[in-house]
Length: 375
Image (cartoon, rainbow, N blue to C red; front, top):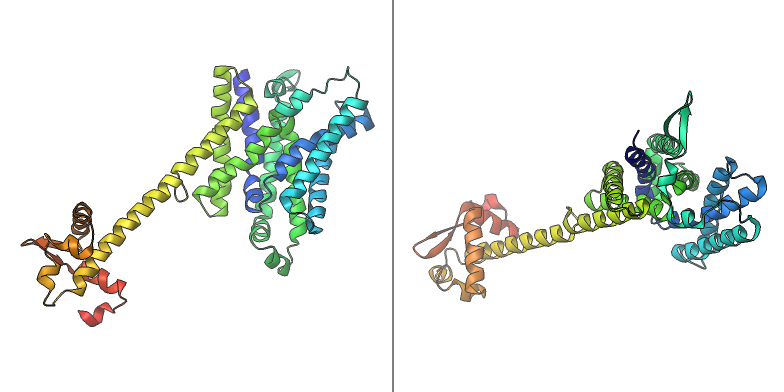
């Protein structure tokens, strides 16, 4: 298997494992906790190393995951104290634990031990694909890819089994408590999965990319849909697209792979934020422009309806002087009149505008006049 394909598989499994949990973090407004967890893993790794003195020990994995849960517990404790808010609690906990891990690393870990701080900060997927799983002595696939694929299946299975409970506890924790769903337990279940996924992706893609994979695809999906099931699917799709494009660009331009993937995801969010319906800026601007145009057409229909059958009807509906009565510039009136004619609300004849039955119904509806009584 080529190195490029190995990198794509590694990044894709990391993207799926993280992105499938991201929507719950974004909707619960605890997305920043992923940044905290991805940084304090160093603290757990160093503590586990100091205990077992073996960089290949599986206990380093569990030590890192435990440090993530410790971070969540400390943040929750600070929040419940009501002295600090959630963002301040995260800002208090994770720099402290991260700095403590860095201090312990420099004080007690021998200089000859290969525990690269740069890799901890940036991530190096290139090294992750070199540790291969062997089958009968034949290298098959990167171990990190297998672990992340397993975690993706674990996360997907947990979400599938607890979908209703997670959904209700996310949107209405009080109601979830009434139904006996134990939102606190569900919260720690979710955070346990987040910690495990962050630890597994930590060595492969680095903390910055881990945060990007958790948060950015979910944010993109949320701009497109309000349905949680759709958001979950779109989140994984966006993560896969960003990972593929990021890896390809990094290999083409010889840049840091994790950083390139995070950058591509940021650019992808920018495109969605600008163009995607229904919350994209340009999409909302277009809808506002359409609503404004429809409002002007309705005002024209109302004006004609008010003077229909009156002595002033001829003057008020004359095209030449109509702009003075509705107080619009002539060019604006011409555009509104053309759109109203295309919509079938008015017709132009003998230099006058006349309401059609559709235009009359629209005006009556605006005045809340029962249509049947006027027919």
